[in-house]
Image (cartoon, rainbow, N blue to C red; front, top):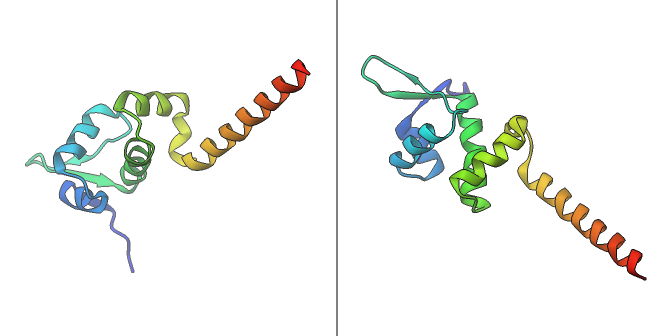
Amino acid sequence: MIEKVYYSIGEVAEKFDLPVSTIRYWEQQFSILKPMRNKKGDRFFSQKDMQNLSIIYRLVKEQGLTIAGAKQRLNENPEGTNHNVEIVRQLQAIRDELVSYMDELKTV
């Protein structure tokens, strides 16, 4: 089966179960989203846009970050579009536990 190359904004909204207005807002807020437009002004999202939307979706919907927080996270890790956010979060939690444990050892 051949994968689609471009998705209409309606298809994107349906895929992520979001209103079209949310997709339009995210497009305005995140420079990593660069849909093509036809002469009528219809938006068409590429596979890369879909990957980036997936990252934004995870940051905003699953992790509960604000738009500003999601932008900051992406600015801190511009290649974050290729990383599994959950793994990074787990590694940070492990690091925090180790730092806390080392601090406790210093006070003993």
